[in-house]
Image 1 (cartoon, rainbow, N blue to C red):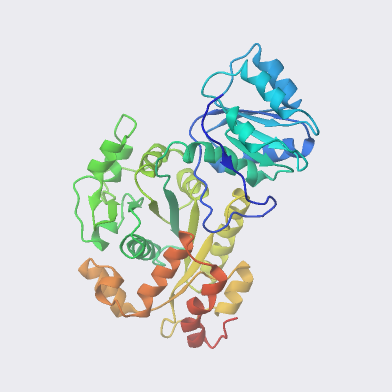
Image 2: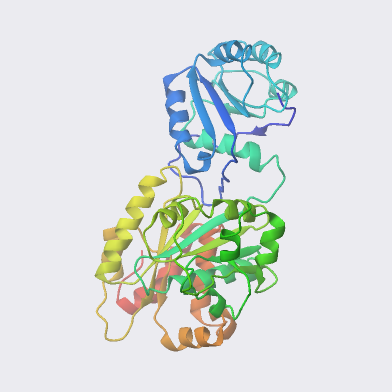
Length: 424
């Protein structure tokens, strides 16, 4: 067993979703074997094995607890991670001593103990246990424990991936993504990178006034697995903390990808960037679906009309069902209050999708048109305007830096006043 110090488990099990600032980075390709004593723990382990953050792990679940583990490893090599549920009232320390005799060096061990176990934590540390979780455990407890073995012990940045997608074409999702990323980098001072995934028609280079010779296409089409050095060469610097992987924006080829085409690029960027903002084009394909489901947080951008209402509801429903252990995806309303355009009011929109928007961004064709034509962000040309503050509030929510209830009134007040709706 490894001699690394374990990480204490102080969170209470049973929460439906992780807290806003509880960023759980995915594990690399590892093998995990769990030995359970109870059907409840086995069920939680099975559910955890389906989670996106453990998607690269090869997980085996067996009953029999510590005794079965010791018997198994007398004749088999140990995996990267062993999850052990201690028997009720059993001698955990003697079992761990016996396991150590058949356990390969470097194997990481998570022990699930009962609420009445009185084993000293320092004795577990001395025996090389990496994490001790007090049962009964929930799915998220297992995910957090296994993932923390790697994100904490490797002493590297595990960047948060944020996917932004439009509920419909032309709703301004790219503009919102670029301005929110600007707020993350320049106001929150988080090292961030924007990846423009609209290969044929992407506008990130125009919006940031950049014309890089290389970008995301050079990474995706190069034959070898991208490493940190390659990604650093491909990034275009937009500001001190913001970089860009621009789309080629050419029609010389068709950009069809497999579902996991961008995984290696994102895994590499996670090690050096605190936030990776994915500007996802409005299409439904294997790779866009995979990118959305495997992001840490999701923002859907919509306008207040019927097609956007339907699409937003469908997107949120599918993404919630595909990510049962994640925070629900967020959405914002953009271009609200356009003159002479009939709109669905905020209250009805929120009721139908069963969630409040994280922000409502007023329609301002002059402001946004000037920013687009100048290759600038809204905050650069109208710092005192309300809109840059909305982008900052969205950035705060996506990075887990604000309580949504505390900010709800300030986010909705301007547009609620415009629509004649009283914010709660």
